[in-house]
Image (cartoon, rainbow, N blue to C red; front, side):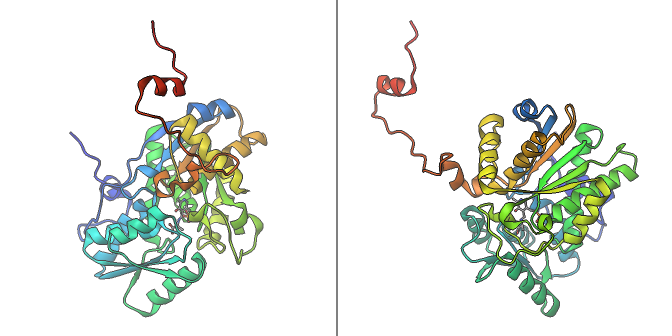
Length: 358
Ligand code: F0G
């Protein structure tokens, strides 16, 4: 039986991978594109969810990291560095561990989700909490890579974008064409840039008939691209995209231009509402940042901007188990406490509202 070999093997001919490249893979990619009946019913579009939480470390970052770490090793690197809101650090630490090299990761103090922190520690990353935000961490990581023998694996490294473009290839492999719209979260806008590149290459190779319109969403408290200005003190509960000065800002604007795309902002309450809709009505549990794709679709559909019958793909970027605390809150913010019942079948049946079959 065939086992998926990871994106560097599966898309070898479309990436800068040669016999000299030591492929470092954990089997990333090949994620499901799931038809989301409930979201189609809510919007009138044909909605599919690209479930990136299924990747080895639970986020889409693994696609870029297999490429970045493989190329780093090819070039003789013994240590890599990155700044991260959590997922990149988890992925870098895991792939570096697999390759037998060191990963140093810089994260904003107190601002990354527990699941991601524990991953970086578990994989033996050299984790430092910096007393600043993500943008400060990235400045330091770039400085270090310029002046010390460490290889930068943030998405300013083109290898990351190259690996991540494979997600667009997979969408086209399944749908047989590009979708009409592609919705995704935006932090540094590396993934927005990567999908656009993947779809553009598919069009150039006649694998598709069109480019999708790329619709990217930032959290309202961290929306520099939407506002057209750096946000000095970005805030949002969607910690993965708490970024005030996106590294791929310029590429993102080019990609929006090329695809007749859109950037929008969504507030935290709407993000959490969308997270709940996706988990309760579709059965897919994602972290808050990922739910912004769903919130963005619902908002744009409501605004009449998504014609009925359109094919829509939503990328949900990270698994819900990375940052589970938000699911344990009701819509009013109060904590959900599951009911406690005695060891008694009739009592359990009563609490569940079950009536005995006769
Ligand atoms: N969704 C999740 C779950 C993320 O972790 C990120 C970025 C994004 C979306 C946005 O992707 O930056 O390419 O626009 N996380 C980075 C990190 C910043 O350090 O893990 P982007």
